[in-house]
Image 1 (tube, rainbow, N blue to C red):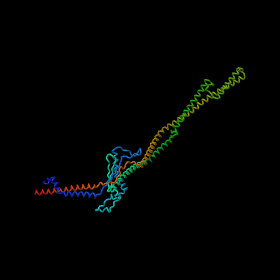
Image 2: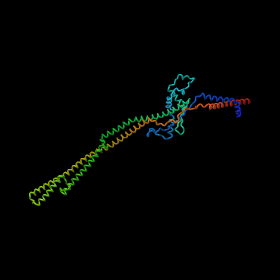
Image 3: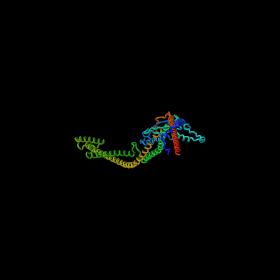
Image 4: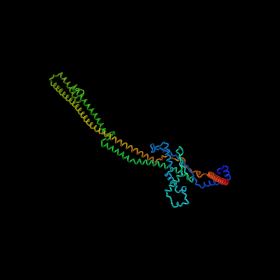
Length: 453
């Protein structure tokens, strides 16, 4: 086709012939670019930076929240908090705090061809929702690579407004994190407090059941902390030991008296009493007297007869006293044996009672363990509820603003007039060059067709 043989030189010639149009288009594009930037609403972007660590401060050794050291979980935690910045709770509070409802910055421009806005007044809720949506579109939240630093940027038509919005959103976001943390701690405290009544009733019931079983089975404890039956058994064992000692002592005394009398007669050293000592002394004196009288008097002498009669009477008295002492020793043995037998019977009866108490002690210890476990659980939950209630009052969040927003000196949109003029000039140049090239091509095509005809 003839139009296919167009060269670059031809295109350059077409452009050179229309250089005046190109210059005019460049000037017009530059002027239009600058004019458009003057007509467009400027956007001033304020930037603030926050640190959002994945875990809170550890204010107690046994905090409600456990620290998670897995990187994936930490990133999820940070990104979840980043989403909170543009959440409805934060934006709603920012709107109320700054009084943005009815603010000209966010007011919708009335549509000239649609007069429905004059009659259909949106409700306060609808206005708030629309304002939240508009405000959310102005917010940009990004996280810097390999850090906990989050950049929050907000744009507005005026520098001071953008800075005020950025700082208000950052502060409200931190307050929302603190409030959410306090609410979680409060819910935990309420849940624990709700369980305290049941746990206290269960612990009291277990303690009462244990005490009732102890009273019903006579398992009351003495001053030493042991059951009364055990203390009674210990006392009985002490009495048995004393009774056996007394019996052994009485039998030893009786055996000694009997052996001494059989071997040495009444003069045995083991047979001693005050009466017998007096009688033996009288007998010794009487024997000395008889020995003296026998040297001077005959055996038929009245004095000798009286002395011999008196000696015989003393012998009988000594023998009677000796027998009395032997019977007394025997009586002591019998009494000690009777006392020991009585204590043995009482011990057997008490041992049977202790055996029954031992079986009851097994059940009692089981009840005590149950009561102790419930009491320990109640005390643990009580302490935990107190810690949770105190934790609710403490701000343990580590979210903080490290770079407050300041009013920007220059708008981020539209671009500066020099850049807008350059862009407009370039656009005008391209449009004009395209138009001239197209016009030249069409002219060359018509010329080729006319020649061919």
